[in-house]
Image 1 (tube, rainbow, N blue to C red):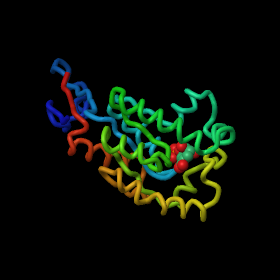
Image 2: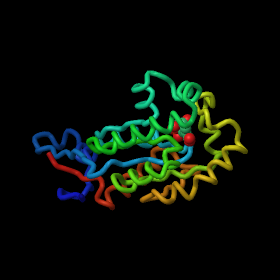
Image 3: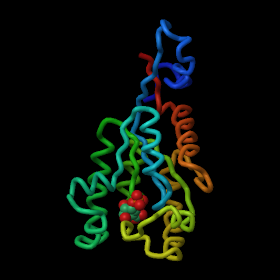
Length: 208
Ligand code: S3P
């Protein structure tokens, strides 16, 4: 499905920029909708949650963080699930949650970094969504994660470099777009994602 309404060119911020001069002029604002779920993938610390939340605020769309969703559903922290059920147990829950989110009203979804490991998940991502791969080096990612105890699979940088390298072909396999996040702010990454979503007809503006 693609956009059938106006293309996304005017934001509500543009519309209100003239302030008092515009009093009495009918105000045109846009609401936005997604034609497909947008999945953010990439290594731990790539900025999936921050970028999806920023875009959601800008566009008035829903953002869902998969790990937070899992923690609410299981009433446990991700680290506790790893301790009690191992990585295998966590991955089974992750697949169930991914399938559920893919079938819901389209939203901006920040996936856990390992979501691409299961072939079944990669099929869901490719079939049902538009996938944004936020690329980051393990060294840069380490600097962005304040508390490593929340990431059971990020123990030290050398191990993370290897894990990130091993996963690279899988991130690339599912990606509709790849954004190198090196040295960029959350705002500028969000801007790049938004432009791509407009261009691909995944983000549509509706005037009201
Ligand atoms: C994981 C990434 C984490 C979380 C879990 C496993 C991984 O999510 O799902 O600790 O295998 O890369 P973030 O990528 O949001 O940190």
